[in-house]
Length: 577
Image (cartoon, one colour):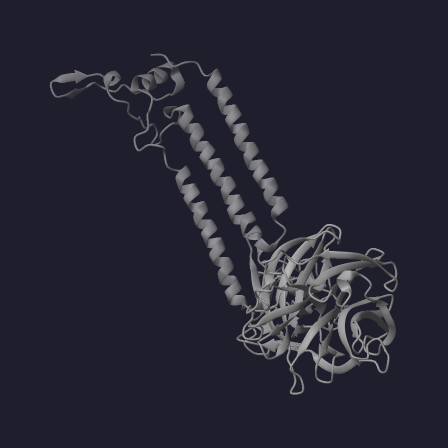
């Protein structure tokens, strides 16, 4: 907190500067515009004297310059002192007016600088500041980490919950394996569509429901192979609901090629097939062999699709991108995530993308392979085109060599449900839950100085796109929100509306929320109040109304004087020569 002595010194410096300015203004008004002002000729002065305009009789004798005699009329203009002073009649009218104008201006500036400006130019003093070098000014916190003089969020990792969607038995449609595809939550019910494998038969798409996302009730197959393009099996399903319509995209195998097909439904159970919507590329292209594992997002006007592809010439999988105005007619946009993008974990392949819009950002989970082990990696993007690396999300355990096929659902509290497939005990559906990546911090009690009011709360908090630092101001005693200042975006927060008499002590609080893979940082915060001295001074009185009146009177007096001067000059007879 700044001491009263510092406050007084700051204020004294301001006022001293202003008074120096006034002194300069007044000094200038007392100075004539020229060292040798132009006066009326002596003959004119003498003429006026002879006309009785002055009782003094002055008859300057001629004087000599060299051998010549020069009369006063022919001499240079000079001033004639009468009674020890210079009469105003000797000054030109324009000069007299300028002097009066400058005197008036000096008076106005004096009033403004001495009375008004010190009140208006008063600044603010910092009463509380925390740079987070330690926790001495922190009253409470949760889920935060101190790093190099800043507050941030510690890394979070998904907690594994084991098998939640086991494979079936006997003649079940999923007796040979389960591969999670897509999960939604609506009407209090979790819904999942997944790839189901049955012995040597063709795979199909099955459906299950849950009330908690952990214990599932299987509903059986909802889409089975029936078209030539899917004769050898279908799997790798994606479901998105747009309005009242469920859209499904899935991969169909005809025995040689994988292609992407579509279907629509009104309830997510009975589906109408739309056929192949994204075919393999031309021979020699980068996706002329397999197109599979699609993931779609509807952005409000267009469908966007990310999918796995490879070619006969390069069978290493890569992630591709396409767009469509209707979900059926697609335009390929090329490779989105190449292999080796986050080495070494995806040095061999990138595949099986899962993309969701989270907090305005596109978040992708995908399977990366180093040639021996498959892991789930992450990425995020502002536009779905240019991606930032998110690193490793889910690694294998000693019993696994493959962790893949992520299906993600973001819950309202910010936590993630990540369903995935693993080869630890045949192919089954596993669950990992990543907690919400957020935390909060609250300051110690902040007391305002005597006679001061609250002014401002400043927060320095660099935040990556998609992350946030939101601040709340509370009463230190009751912890009630004051002034409606709750969850305000960081920066400069105006506290002038907070009643300082009702809330003489405050605490400030910040909530930090990360993006999918990047946390924000809280570098410092401070609270300030108006810069007041320890005791009141006359300048702290409500002088502004009086100053306005004084300025108006002075300006009026100047205008009246100028008017009378002009009338007097107009009525004065011309001097005789």
